Image 1 (cartoon, rainbow, N blue to C red):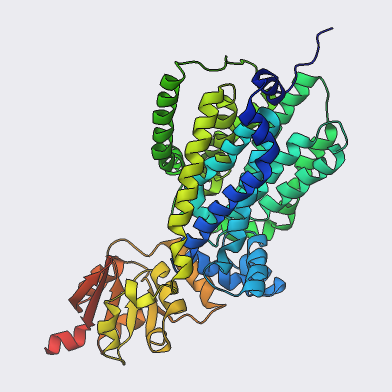
Image 2 (image 1 turned 135 degrees about the vertical axis):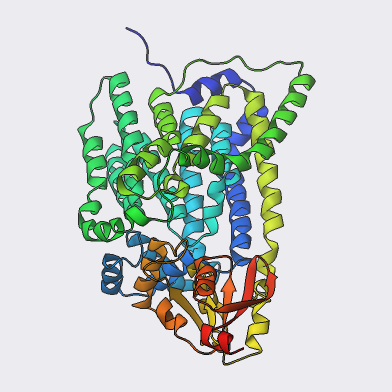
Length: 514
């Protein structure tokens, strides 16, 4: 009878022998990980403190202020496209810490750190402490880091997904099988309660569990029940999903095959520079050691690698789902970064030199970046008009309305503007048959939904065309400028700054008199 193959981390430890660093690190990994997570958190908090909340984040913030019944009613009417849990978590954070730039984004930061830690623990069990440390750091050098400081659900989805894979790993016969199996269901339910596309996690989970059952010859029905139970909240969300599906055919970013390479390029492009530093350091280290390295071990934890690779391939499933429901964006499959971190760490684990060099490079990189990004935490909050200096010209004529061209710009100006600015702001809905282009249908729907719950100065284009007195237009190039010129109005450009243009519009009747 063949003896069972020990886990990769145990085989590596036995080969390490008298490795002093390995012995030291296996003893002190907890405080080291704590310091690394603190550096990541400080950097992300600094990034959060340096920029104002933008359009989608403001929808989250406003939704967080609703009562539970109001939130359900708003989401069922098409207010936003997410399940309710993200708004509830933001509401708890805002209630505890206020609605500041960092506090509103705190759930995302906590979720990102939790996902990174869960991934590290997952990999450490399979491939050792150094590999776990690499897995802890890899997500922060990808574009997934951007969602650690954005008040949308993606950072929290990342955390929930990390808990899912960690719980699945521990759901094997033993002391922790029952609580781990229950945790699979709870974490997956949390993920789909944050974003509907998180349901795609069942695909890598199913592939990994099937592989584990085949390799061990042991069927675990409890895990399959847990996976199915994790999807059960979707039944309650059917009315909300129906409202969200109304955006599908006119969603601002449609699913396409081009989205597939874009997703990988978006998440992986930030990795290029730190990994180039790693390759250089590894080459130097190899020369110093005369090319010696620990011999490779061809055996790998099969089920965990299947899970990791399936996560890395999740964008394929995301784009396919997008073809069905209509909309897709790269951030909907942020969980793919968990697969990336796991695959890199486990693949390098047999080479002590490569693993330690990469760990050192990423640690220095992220600690340095954390200090570099921390400065805004000590600075005053960003000023709205510093990014929109052209509005100072408009404020000099206090009675003239300011028509903001796009919805994202309008919501930010309306939220952060002074009273003398916000009372003059308005956003215009397009005519039924615009001359060229149009305000995106999904954006129009969102603004109309927002107007039912917040104070929004929303006007139809026919009302604007009927005006007999001047007004300003502020923003970038858009359907509105073409439309008003087609209808005989005269637009005079007053200035441009940070990509936004201010124009003073003379309506058709007044322009003809002149």
